[in-house]
Length: 78
Image 1 (cartoon, rainbow, N blue to C red):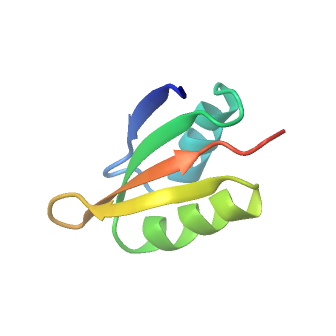
Image 2: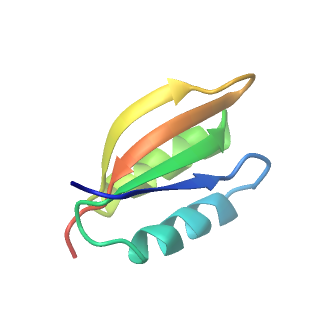
């Protein structure tokens, strides 16, 4: 069973929200899960694109209150 950690990045601007996400993913083993809350707009356009480019999988994207989304990410292999 994979462990899961959470990261709330509401109010964090690009590209720092990607930097925080990437650093947290580097702490996880391949296959582990990370839940990230992002603002709508630029963060939701850029962070998912960067995740996919680095080989991570977005398992779920759910609306989270006004103007925020919760992403469930599976860390890719090294």
